[in-house]
Length: 391
Ligand code: OGA
Ligand code: NM2
Ligand code: ZN
Ligand code: ZN
Image 1 (cartoon, rainbow, N blue to C red):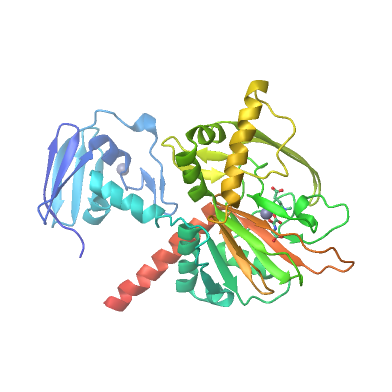
Image 2: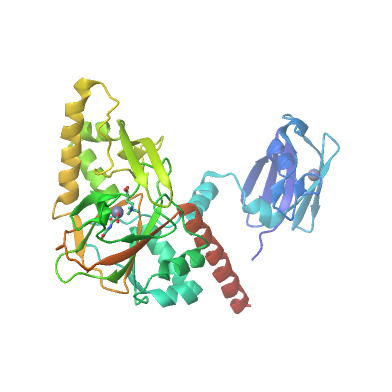
């Protein structure tokens, strides 16, 4: 049911809306004026504001208020401009604490679920998420919530990740190419392109904005070794914080130098400083930036802080590798593992070298902005279709 306005009133710098259900919302006049939807203030085709801050009077007040059948209010302002607002549009923008919390939950959904060795690896058929919107939506929600989803039954040939990229929007190009082949290579330009063990890492902390999501498509799997390992970096960070707050403090504040020099898609020489545990202003983990292989030997911190840093790093690394936290599985041809590269650290066990390539994965990156955008467009579309079905 669309919300209806019972009455509307201006007091000082606010407009008060009383709803049919008895609740009240208050809207700051300057925000209402700034949000005017008329063609002079707003370009409808782009959903974009045209009004500039210079045109906005901080102390603007409502001169005349008009309620149209409970569904719309019309305000004439002290600058003589007139604006119209739909009840539903206003309700969706209520400034109350509860309304704001509910919207945050809606938008950033779903809550994270932490895991350890007990992970129940979520699995979905690859072709289903490719052609069914509900499945694709579920895939993206689970990827956000759990941090990892295994897609099964893709064709065991290159090109499937290009298709997956089209499904979400587009892939993230890096110096290793639009997609990249993980296999043993002569004169490997990256440690991943050998038969060696890869210890727990996130990909590409040498980039200022590391890829949010990683896809690894197994095309060929070796007969011995090559198992995949994953660990929930946010879960382990919390454990570290409990167990050794000082180590946590060091890893969440020290800027670590990363470097990657070589040639692939084009030649490159990339440098970056990243905190291994990256937290926001409220102390919430936002990203793990850890690849021991590309951690630079240049270390731009005072000499006396170096040893304590290594002590903290070793403690974190031990926690990542503890049996309690890591989850091991074997990719088979046709599997596509999709995971949150900002949260989940991954590795693989070594495998025997052989003259012909016995193991081949095709990999690709995407940004969270693109995946979240697809999640939201799918949600709108699916909600739209259930709305029509209900009528
Ligand atoms: C990588 C990587 C995992 C694997 O290429 O960065 O982590 O199983 N590969 O080979
Ligand atoms: N590969 C797998 O940080 C890294 O070096 C990530 C990137 C080579 C595309 C590895
Ligand atoms: Zn206007
Ligand atoms: Zn990797």
